[in-house]
Image (tube, rainbow, N blue to C red; front, side, top):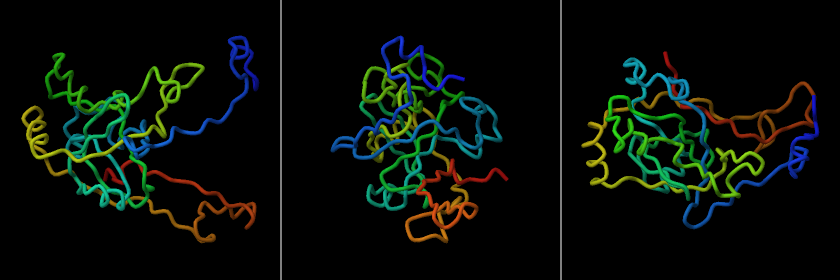
Length: 222
């Protein structure tokens, strides 16, 4: 077991783990993104060719807080575009009370096996793949030692698609179907003092933790 990495030290990097602040949202990208969690129904990029699973989730879904959705004027189930400095992807917006304002949850691994596999669509990759949002050459948005893109905290924007854009999307992939919203999921509650939760009853009243618990989809698969 190596707590201080001799390999990293030999390459001129800090051999110990360290903390870096996430990039700060700005006027162009006022929100933060959270990328990487798969939908409940799928495993990574797999399962989208299974009809029973696609009935539950036909399209990628962005989760935001109710206040955020209201502020942006985006209704539940509406198509929207998430954009970062690296690129953009399309999905449908749903609000969840467990989501903090300012954060957009973005699902991982989306493509549509029923769409064309040619270079123009690549199974929907150009429109729905979260990999387009991650930078590979911005030192503020990658792991400096390995070049791995940050999947959490990247500044982004979220905007509703226009009627014309939705029509163009449906001409390419088919009509937009009703997407079950599902239950609300876990709501953050606490018996501790206001603003805190995950109160530790084992170690006593003096230990409390601020935390954010993100539901994957808030949708049960029963």
